[in-house]
Image 1 (cartoon, helix red, strand yellow):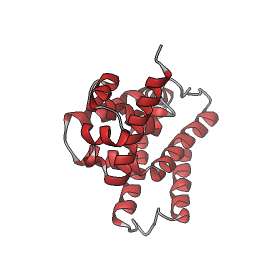
Image 2 (cartoon, one colour; image 1 turned 135 degrees about the vertical axis):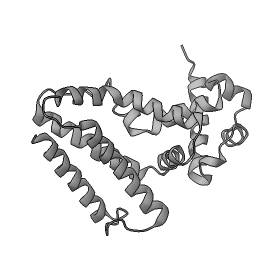
Image 3 (cartoon, one colour; image 1 turned 45 degrees about the horizontal axis):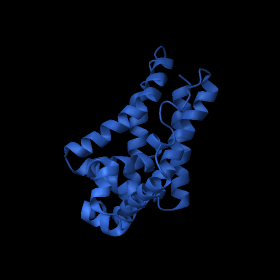
Image 4 (cartoon, helix red, strand yellow; image 1 turned 90 degrees about the vertical axis):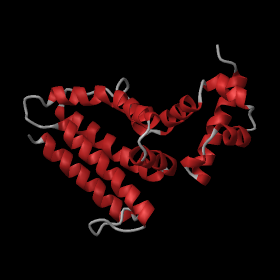
Length: 202
């Protein structure tokens, strides 16, 4: 059984990772910096997490909406299309809103698509593993309807990520829509609803 002291110390380390990314960006991360901010000796970080990569992987799993809140084992796919439509719509919209509000996760996603590295590839692969049960169940349900639910999901998730990153990094509109405003985000949410509705009319 893990002691309460270890749980608290691990959380201090994860909190330090969060603060460093928030205040200085992902590139400022390093064991020395994390140790200093967390007031935890470096050997203890390695003892609890094994490596720097495993520490960051643990942190990402806790802030990623798709892997932390709705992984494939928890997200039960309904066989009723009306209920399933509601589930899928909620998943996509909540992921968009969560991503928009989480600057640290934005930094990690931006890093994962702009830097080619084994570690970033492993992070992306881990997200794929969590999402696979959801996509596989959806694909099976739509196999007779000629609807490519994987491609539609990929377009919707990546589009909301891009719109958020574009607005936050460039402080500008895209196709005349400013997703930094509530009105702009409402338009995106409304369109997600419309696209999912069209998918379920097949």
